[in-house]
Image (cartoon, rainbow over all chains, first blue to last red):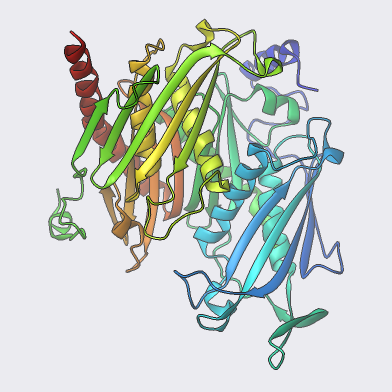
Length: 266
Length: 239
């Protein structure tokens, strides 16, 4: 059920005093837990929990034709399913705009940062390349699926091993994984989303806070600091000073959570 | 401008802060309540507004406010290699982004339970199509007489290797030298320095992104002038 106006008003009152319902700081993430290898059949997989929010991400690989504009590079595709099992707000059916947007924001963060080394995923130029499928499933939506999905995608990619490829038949022998990891680069783009509620800027919103959020900015941020992707979501406008504050909050948050995630992602 | 910026060569010979030739025209779809064309060089977008009208199906009505509904569509022949007609994941996302970019300018709450449909079609694409679409849609909304607090003006900033440039075209979007191309579309409430659209594809430091934002802030003033001129012309024609 959507959060009541009553609750949203109360969230705003709290924020005005710099407080949140769960006593977190405005720039504080809930506990983040990562588990990898949650599905044996996937080439790579991960479960990420941020507080009660949970996503599962699987990486599958297959061989296909390259795109006309990248004849010697592998491909990538990100899809998201917001499962009805994860919230009473989601329904079965074709992907909603929320699912499409989430997948595309995560896609850009990974693609533009060149986290996956696509040049090493070419089997035969112009004919055969690897396609990396990153499939994101929501298991429990208690807010901030975006950042959970971003971390989940990275962890699943990091966890992935190349399947066996039979050069004679030119087919993938599914079910047999090599020890070869997926070729990855060193730039690791964390997805960090800052929300604006009234005059407050917060990260990692609960579901209720997400309902109160007027606008959000998701950044694919890596060490440097370097942005690889960005997306403003929702229709409230932002002034320039607010954008600068958002950058500062994101950079701070990055420094705070990176050490905890490092061993899963590096 | 620094000497480096002076010597930087854009594929079409523009200065780094030079927008392609813009043109705009109001009233390109007579059937619509409001319509407009907006052009950045070889990128041409048209937009038509229908509404405020009753929202159907009824269960989608919001008695507290009106609803803005945008569709962005690229014509199959608008690019070198034909694209399949109909909505794609890309077009659906851009539709939503466009909606978010325009909504802050509208006083749509004045029309409860209604919908304002904005249909954008890209006739010819040479990059920055979402920006052209937003610019066309903003004028079309004004032309339709939907009450607005401001116009919305949009422009893309590119980073080609290390150099920031205003209004990216297709050759620049495909820039491969050095650090490659970074694409940053922006939209502002035209007279208020308030951002309604921010996206980024590529790699850039926060510091340089701020510079890009500043370039966009200046560039949209020119876009705004073109939009205003088109609206004024349409009023003179009607008289």
